[in-house]
Amino acid sequence: MATPNDTWNYDQAFAELEIVLAQLEEGDLPLEQTLALYEQGVMLANLCARKLTEAELRVRQWQGLEAAGDQTKPFEGWQDN
Image 1: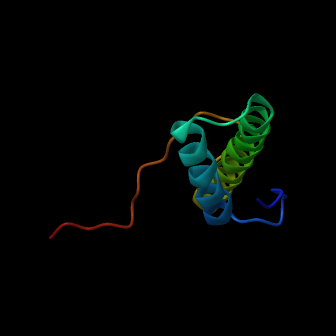
Image 2: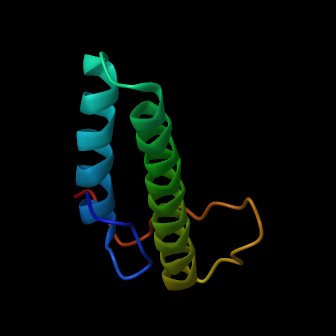
């Protein structure tokens, strides 16, 4: 199993997280291996969360919103004729 790092994209981290979760759900693993998988899963989940936060900040910048605020801006590009 590969060690997650910040060079991974969201899809890589999420795919690896799914593998870890499947292994944990199967059970019948020694305690040490279960703990190692759990730690790996936490790191992967944190990496996924960080990537999603980064994506959200980029979208907010594209919309011209402050990243720290909880504001929303309606999409004004759609015209329904």
